[in-house]
Image (cartoon, rainbow, N blue to C red; front, side):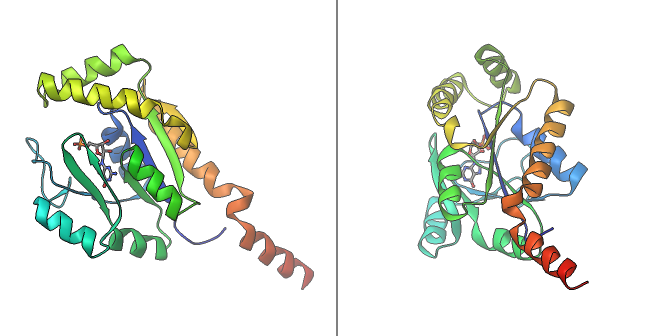
Length: 205
Ligand code: 5GP
């Protein structure tokens, strides 16, 4: 199989539990996880350099100016971006890299990396999504309302994604997302060089 690393974009409605899904994918299957930069305030328990690189708006702007991001986007009232260097280095090493980013970012990634695999994680229905957001207890009513409005907009963009996975049961969801990633690696179009090489090797026998 080809040795290059794949770029895997995982998006989903706010509160759908995609952070937990991604964490499990990293722990259970060893994917590399890109840590984003953001201008939002850290939430209780979040650690700089682990959950996000927390930046001032001017530092974030500098990174944009120096082409430091693969993509960046404004989400609710803050900026979020994917640092370029980590992703490019990991892919060169043949590691598959997960980006947990929102829809605008996913579109920008697909433009630059047409081979990127885009997976959308959704809740079983809107009511369950709202309950999960409230249950998280980290955001005010106003922010929850904004996130739900944003989710309605994001639902319009699901077409951009290659796969949709429902997060009803965490274990099932993690397995399903990994299966999608493995299947994508085996796709014929992602193994053209391998196929050519093995043809040549067999002819030379
Ligand atoms: P949160 O504030 O809940 O941590 O993240 C809000 C949204 O920003 C989530 O949908 C998350 O996936 C997205 N996000 C996190 N990092 C990035 C990034 O680097 N780029 C983009 N475009 N979105 C991001």
